[in-house]
Image 1: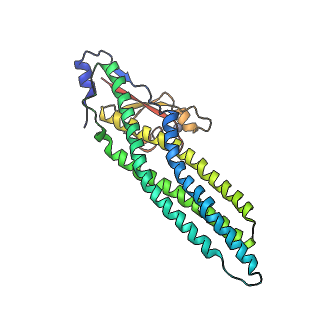
Image 2: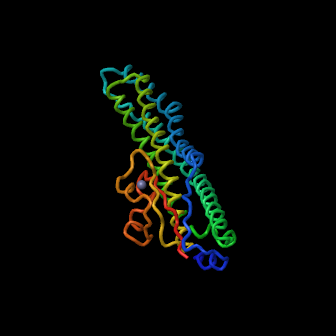
Image 3: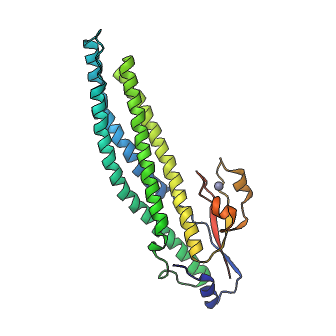
Length: 272
Ligand SMILES: [Zn+2]
């Protein structure tokens, strides 16, 4: 629901001709909470590798040795165990969906309360009964779908790496100890990627909420705040401090926080 904040602020006696919001920065704790959800999927593979895949690998290797000279394909047993871990991973992706929704909902409520408290201070308008979680439903649905796809991808990638390691290992008869090391390295990559995704997705959700709420409140422009990140985009740095309309090319196609790992923020500008 659109809110005519400018009219309400004038009615409340605000004399300024422009109000600029402060950037709403998600916290590291919020990011870590999300990272935990992603890492849980990698843990399914870590446990599965330890309890199922590696023991099957060792057995297959021993049988391969016992039947030396004969080319018996022992990959089947390992494959069965990988499938079993995959089923567990699929179940945990269902769990992820629910937990992610709860995480995103908490972030959304936190963001909304920040907007409400900032603006009630700046404009004397009480937005607490005017803003609702349902206003940003589309963004919330998008972000759930996107993150479920991402976690599935993390799982698939981890599975692919592990399968590659064990099948290659069986072919070259690599000792189980070596294979375990390689699997650990693969799991470590999965954990690192989980952390990067969590950072990026926290930023993306908060950036989408910034835009949704600003547009809802009739803020047609925003002030660009550069992230100050080490690996920044020069064109984003050049926009620092500039006031940009949401319906401009930049506002529509490359707003703050939408590109991968962009940490820039939009400060809403309300013209009265
Ligand atoms: Zn940026």
